[in-house]
Image 1: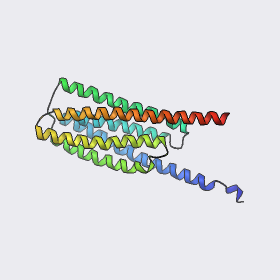
Image 2: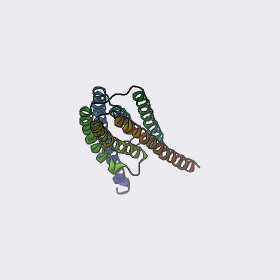
Image 3: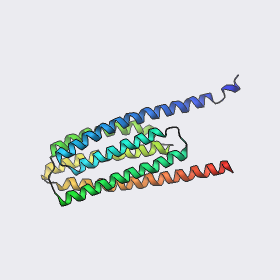
Image 4: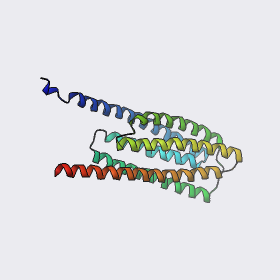
Length: 215
């Protein structure tokens, strides 16, 4: 009788861990979808490049969390491949930020700092909640680690956009908004490279294990 139950506790623990990961990902997915809509509306009303950058980042993150949710409990190889795709999403967000910043350089405008500040503050609060939810899951799983990387970017982005709003108010000019947008571009590019590197290493390790098992 005892032999038939061997490993039951481990199976239950893994299932419980996966269920907890899914709950966290569903929560942060919902938060990012809502903040994306709020940030895009605020960016249009405030004419802010940094807010638009943040909104595009939230959209990318929502897609990232949806992908992470899809591969909870999947093989290491599947998680690594999805993580590579998520790195691509971060890179696309960076390119969108670059294009928007270049357009604003050609068509300068002074954003409305009141709308920027309020939206940035709400976005920062939401991002901090997401980071706190994901932090316990960031180690030992490339899928959750890449999701945590996105969330950490969001918190940095939230502080940056808040600073942009304050500087726009202080100088009554649009250049701080563009400076922050450019800084976010660099941050997204570096983050994409980190995710690509970690995912590629995980993919190679999983492939080596698979070939070793097959041999």
